[in-house]
Amino acid sequence: MMKLWNRILAFFFPPRCLLCGAPGYVDEDHLCADCAKKRPEKLYRFFALKVRRSAYTLECRAPMRYRDPFRRTLQRFKFRDETGMAAPLAIQMKRILDADAKFDCIVPVPISRERMRERGYNQSALLAEALSKETGIPCRLLLEKTVHNQTQHRLSAKEREKNVRGVYRAEDCTGLRILLVDDIVTTGATVRECSRTLYAAGAAHIDVVCCALVL
Image (cartoon, rainbow, N blue to C red; front, side, top):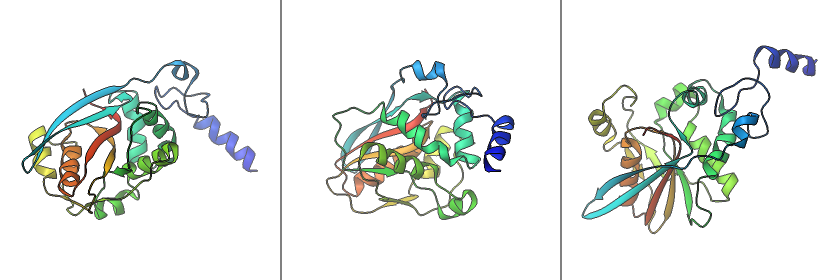
């Protein structure tokens, strides 16, 4: 009965390629034949940070641009409970990390308790845990979101920066080299504020990896 049910589900809801969204056969990485042949992009953005009297440069990298059809994939992952995408997305993120990069831990961007109750999961935490399994770097929940603020996607760049200011708290992370994980980076307001908080708590170095960048 289960095999029959799975065939029925596969007929009406065929698997889709993680990157291009095309329905049909996908491999173990959730990629169609065409996308499996492509080498992942390595996209970058850099943000200037100032914490007290110290200046930092925050490097953020991603394997994909935040545009269709990949944008729709991330929306399904983030809003439609398709949490099984975390593992194949983490594989794409791992492929753009430098082989000789040294990190003490992976830290996900947190969400508020209210948002967790609404959604049921933190997509960035799922990505961080999956990336930890892929890389062997421990995942640590060093950040906490203490304020339930507005969602960012409808705000301007200036409004986003103001909206996230002071909403995070970090545990002591003196001397740690941290890989901060988020799903999407648009203006960079969220990862910049998270990084400021971590540096203020003693972090030695922070890089950011995400699934997609707005360039």
